[in-house]
Length: 301
Image (cartoon, rainbow, N blue to C red; front, side):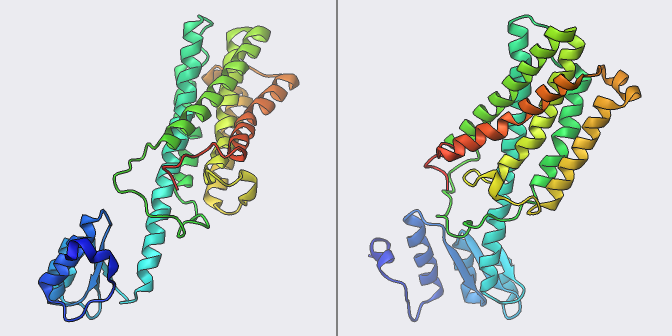
């Protein structure tokens, strides 16, 4: 009867330790994630059974603390809400970093793959690929992990615990964003190749790939909200990472001694215009997809 009717009751009196365990198990049988708070020895079995056991840090017994997953050092229940919010923020940011790195890598792979199929030369040398992966991608990815929580983070329904990182929406975003980066880099390579051969083609492809990824990271603040509605100062670490990576990219593209090391050749004004226009394409594409509400799927928040 308890397992059948547990959702109809919210208050229990004179509950023995074994009854607490049965109540937790009854809720779990309904597919719910159960949190249990307690401070005494008699709470330990239920704290252990619950998906998340929360013990009091000040008045709680050592037995209760040992059986729990979380200990409230201030014995304040409001801290649980803050902990849930922080956990959701961390999980969101992990997804953002994964999406950024994989979409960037899909773009690189697609660029080289298409160039190989059509036998139009190598659009990126190994040292340029290494620079993109170690400098252009890494700094913004690290800073992206410090994004603040989104405004609706505590109004969402709990995430299905069986749901992995790669939802349908995540796969779709990685694919179309990566394809966009890859295609604009290929376009830059073809423009440069036509005007100055492979050296200029590689230079333009490298520039577009680098700058487009640094601009694209702004798209990752939210899968629903426009990038233009998120302030530049929301994540100062990310802004600093973008500026630092951009500065290093300009060093490779403009400083004569460094250019020779990376096989970079000078670009004229028109080529820089092409680089600038193509680098902004991912922002335009992602904003359009967000506007059409096609950037996420029903299995996500």
